[in-house]
Image (cartoon, rainbow, N blue to C red; front, side):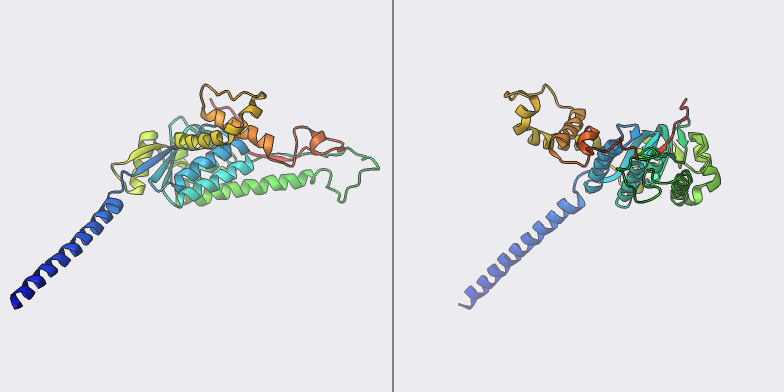
Length: 334
């Protein structure tokens, strides 16, 4: 009886040990598979498909930046940029969005033909910048067009305003002060982001000159001369990765975008085509997707203004003429 008990004790202890060891092996294997070897890291490539920055282009570019920021497989991002700038608010948005991406993973910008004004502001959000020798960079400054009076003097007795500048928004001196304040804010962004690398004074920056890539590097406005290859290698170095793949962020975002648009359009095709048929398009391109979104917004989303003044502001005497502010380089590029 004692022998049987001994045999059972050995067998049971072996069985338990086997189960425990198997469980530990499965756990260790899972950790190794999912944590140590989760797949190749990726470097996201964003090729900005616009030159002028405005509300619509900034919307699409922000979608690229958001995708790269939220995709955990993307360990670093390279942005290829050519832009003379554009609208002030849209340019500022892209600077903040690029800097937000930088806070999560390294961002390297390749400056191509021209990166000036609002385009240069966006590049200040990156960790590192490259330019070609013949790239034009700089033009740190503001263009502001004051609106002028909405209602001519003397106004009709039926029109009442509540302040001396209600008709025009301010005096010429006010708008000069506003443009100078925006210029100083732009200069401060450059000074803060470039830091000790700058070899040019804030006063010189504020002259809004344009520089070649070689001069930009010498003055500290750009980090180094180089192109796509150098930028990818730098991004991998900053992210401390090797054996990486390249991910075309543009293609991925447009693929997701068009898939969503297709789901929206499918039940609306008869309405969009203006007849009762459910015909299909020969092909779908990224541009089609962007245009469809704009069309759907116009068709189904309410807004504060209409296509014509009469529908937006019935009975108002003149077209609305707001002040326009640009971070835009308008000089020669060649």
